[in-house]
Image (cartoon, rainbow, N blue to C red; front, top):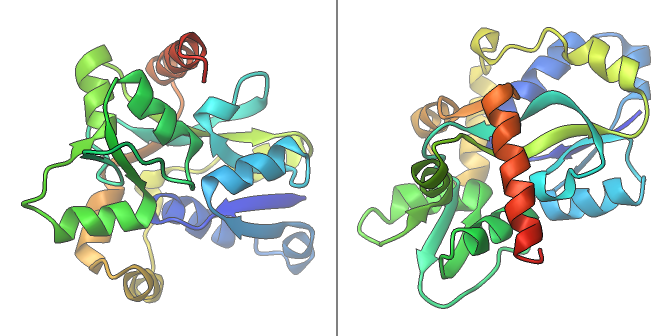
Length: 219
């Protein structure tokens, strides 16, 4: 099974869980990880070069996925729009589309670099796109879903007990991500409190609305 991994902080609890759950060396050899950023993973998944991955919501139409994704209930801090001249973030299909759906102009910034920008530029004006969606539609925003084209039973087996509340990030991993991103341990943990992974009724309604609005925009 080839699993594409988004190497951003927002999926840190999931990857820590998966590492602990898959302890068999034989299974670890079967599960091959491919690290990359969201928009490239989308392309690899669509070409079936990977078997399962968290793919951007805008690419989820007609794909099979579990009731797991990357969700923001309110603000997310890692998907920002800096008002001004329009500029897409090449790493994200969904966030670029979200800005257009919300009729907002400016530079889209996602992921760890956006989170670092948030903590380094408190005086600079920006819009949190997840919060803007919540304010307009009163729904959480779904940035990605855990999709698969093969190995459904194996994926279900190793994800069915995933619960963010039960995951503790080891201090050495926190230090690694803090050093890599320039974001403090405390800010990483505070950020992860804002991320959810379960796709319930509201989340699915939000995803359906997003895909409908994307289509209306010709995206």
